[in-house]
Image 1 (cartoon, rainbow, N blue to C red):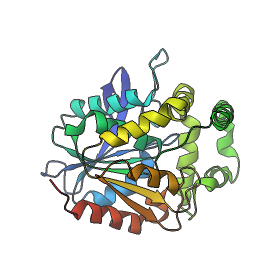
Image 2 (cartoon, rainbow, N blue to C red):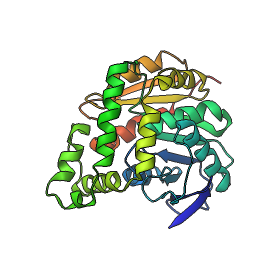
Image 3 (cartoon, rainbow, N blue to C red):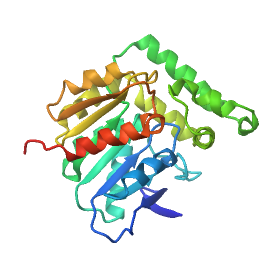
Length: 282
């Protein structure tokens, strides 16, 4: 189990390399979303490992990146973007990378791309975009989400069928039972402080302006990839984002929800491979 110390928190990371990590290949780095872990990126990383050294890791407070008991840090997405920069330094990664980030992880990725442009060759932002501020809706969301975080009891792991129920709204197509069970495990084991803190940091009035600002400042070619049937972050939000920057390209995967990389992996991977092959000005 590989661990890197990042701003006082042990971060789990893993290299997925075909033919050995000593071969000269570019790096593709994956960032997961809220309540998840690097686990759901494993199959995608394996698929791309012939051409890239693929790096997956768990965000602070999620998966196996456990917070110290006395941890008192912040949960702003800018801080998570800085975590990523520190991790790259810790692992001595100096060449520009391909960043592949999802959902809340894509918000972190966008902020990272805007703040550290020299770090990226290209970026893939999955299931993300621009939302409009609605004080009542945001307040309701935060209350409901806070309650959900508090009610994550360990015994829920034993409830038959809860893995299927918990992820149903996120999906349009079925995924493997092992993936469903892992999602439930990741959700239940996420640190309360990180789970609640990142929810508040992701969905608030400030992010309505902060995220579009980050999108405008991204300098590398960037693919916005959306699921046609995504109920969590609808494709319309990604369409609003692509108008902000001439470096952006948009792809919508038909008949999938919030996890296109798992719901239709072959089409998902094909679209990314095409994006990576395409030539861009400059």
